Image (cartoon, rainbow, N blue to C red; front, top):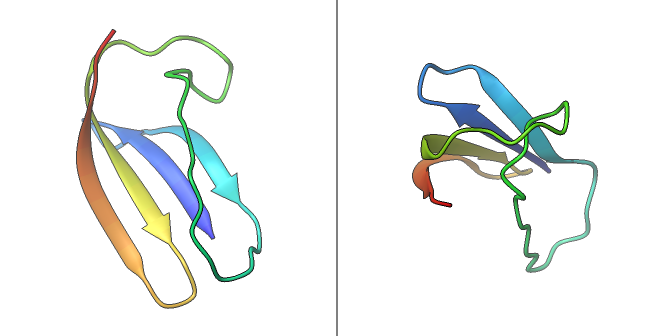
Length: 64
């Protein structure tokens, strides 16, 4: 499973998950920080999820 967050310009902001996981339901919470630990600005971001059988990209809004 891989779960990445991208900013509106398509730049990778952070990777939240990148590991093998057993089938099931999981929750992931993003703390609004990038890969360096810095707070990112509020606005539109995209999450990109890759699993064994699914690739999905969805839009989300980060509010503070």
